[in-house]
Image (cartoon, rainbow, N blue to C red; front, side, top):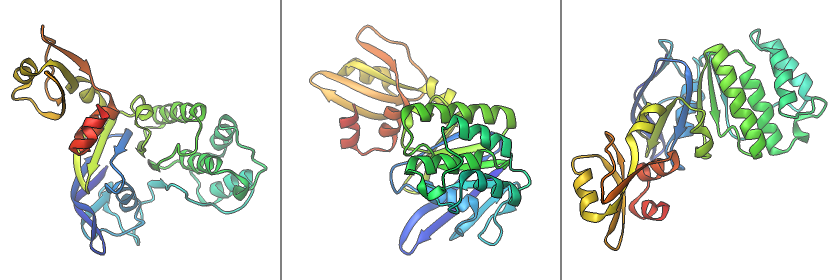
Length: 285
């Protein structure tokens, strides 16, 4: 179990996380979203024990996490993270030598599916290839909790699909908890089971993707009928054009009416509506 209890993290005068509380008590794939500077990477570093909280408690399976008490259950892959400059095949062997739970056979299988050349040294790889190698080491680590910070950065569309397919397969077989922080929203929407959105260091939303499918939608039509239909509902954004109005809603579902339509709201539009400023929302719609 992962628990953040009233956690604050400050870097000088900058507050990265502010009285942040979150409990993750079941395995699965979690999508972590937030604008640049929202606190996503700080959250992952706190959970991995790479930095210390300024206040509150971070715990994994009931044990407090800190730089001097890094959780053995967690493997963190940071964007741009480096490895020793050795051949990939030797790098995987070294990982197995220091981690008895490392699945070398699985790592070799993943390297084949990711089109990685095991004879190449780490520093010879492109940025995208290095990201693949780091991801393989994480997925084969045998750790209970994987933290992936922008794991598909530098991947082409084909490799991103391979990655998400592998992630689903791996989690289904092993019961891992995987938290994926990404800006490529539409693709993770088809993979994640639960959604975490943070904004300005605070938890904005934590829900199942199925709940989002049911409660996030757009109502469009003549302004007055749309206002009447959405009265009392949680409207997260709206845009006007002449006598027409579109409202993005996150609440109980309503049926379409004669003077307005109801359509599903994708994760990207929902995210922008929830955390974007008014101008951003208008441009997004």
